[in-house]
Length: 387
Image (cartoon, rainbow, N blue to C red; front, side, top):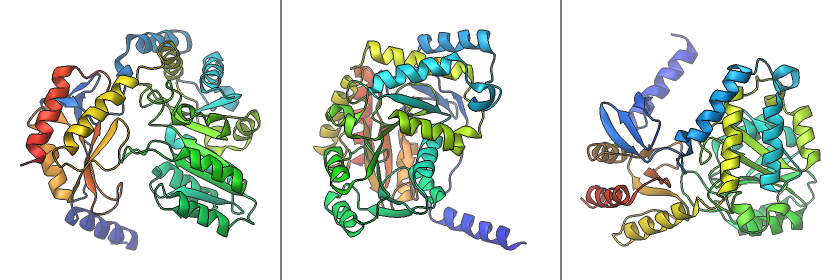
């Protein structure tokens, strides 16, 4: 056996023994809030379809119309032949919605983060990143060759000390999630803006899990009134907006630079026209009803209060993402399977996605839950977790 295969074999044995082995579940139907998994009909609370828009007839009709007019593929990269009028319409409406001069659409949120960090930073740069930032941000920093300076999660004093230490470095970038995907807590964006100005940094905010939910759908930065102080806003269409793809919004200068220097944009085929059309329809729906995420936040607050009152650890969540901290990997999987037997599917998140010893159930609440479904969730969670 070659050295590479021997190493892989050893790593797989370690993954199995640590209770971290992953499988791709076969799902028969996942169109709406119920899914078919292993012959069971389960209420799906693992999806990021927070507003239930993935089953919207408006989005589906827009996608079908685009297929009829443009076919199923963009054909090539956007700079070669893949940029039809739908892209232009989407980016203009997206820029207007985010109240930024310009916007740029990418093939996924992962690609957007990879591209923006690797393009804006280089080996002469320092990137200050929250320790719990998404993997796409971490990978973008690695690809850029920049020095990666991690600050303790949401610890602004630690970040300030690190910035002071490197105050003479001219090429500094701060990047953070706004809503952290596995913890549901919120970044201290107001303090980050102050530190950005104090230490002359570029500030990038990933609003992937806040888009559609916070700030009249525009994100947490907008809700806090500091959106004009953020240099680049990143977000996705694949979560609350119910479709697929990522985006970046900011100054005309930075967007033009990404178009001209962003390898992940230049060297990949554009999104299919149907997806671009569905994204455009989702943005328009959100503009028509920008506060449709507010009932979801009210529901989340109610559930967190209910769980806290029963001594269940939900971390520091302040959003529609609710972690139920279990700790042990095997017990987390066991509880997930027990909930399957009760008709509920939630994510079971284990290291390395989260720190060792913090395996958890990740509840992703959705706005289309009715009262009976919400009562079922609260009752069954407490039955399983209080055993």
